[in-house]
Image (tube, rainbow, N blue to C red; front, side, top):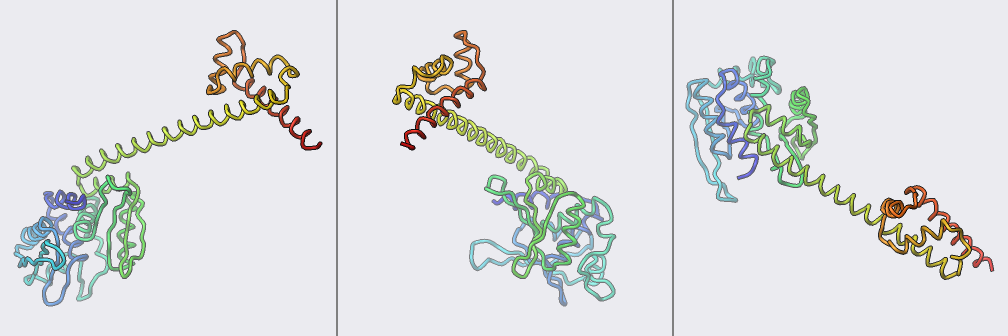
Length: 309
């Protein structure tokens, strides 16, 4: 079972007030119903289909006709709910039709407080939403709707909750999406999918910790590579001085660091400084770097003179 289905199955079992049921139904009908002489709702999840059936029965005291069909391309089933009674009353009550005209966006009373906004988003998610499992490579929550103005309405109420949603055109529809892990977790709290929140947070924290560990390991490896490159470069400069018989011509301080570098070829400058200090030679990492830079300058001068000849 997918994570989206887990979340839908969880919120489809919530007990809510009558006002919330009406608002949830408003979002469901707006985004999944075909309305002509009858209202027909197509659903692919039996738990969501039962939720919608119970909402109509509890709020309007009617029993939708349920037809179950096998899908053509897989072994799944689709559920068709048909409502024939009290249609005008229902459409008016749900703010789908007003004075004989279809409403693209519901009237204010449908989402007049925070609980009703949560209910509307819950209904929308049940029929038009999907969410990636946090175990996958990317965090993603989306709603697919049929109209740009309506998409902006959904984005507005999401962003009033600071969920940072955005809109993109997808073929003939519009996708409202959220990609930030923390915001997706906040959305699950909004629709009261608390089991989903716990699972999502556990996986998110594990992934964040793993990513941090990988970054630290990469930084550590980069530092090791840098130390190796620096030490190797210094050894090469020392070899050049030996090749040109220049060791006896440089001062004692430079010969001193050359001796320790040859003895400890893999040590970092910090480690080399500590070793020399333990031997009674007080020198900082910066001081070591300065001396090795002088050795490099001497080698460069020798090589430049040879090129001029």
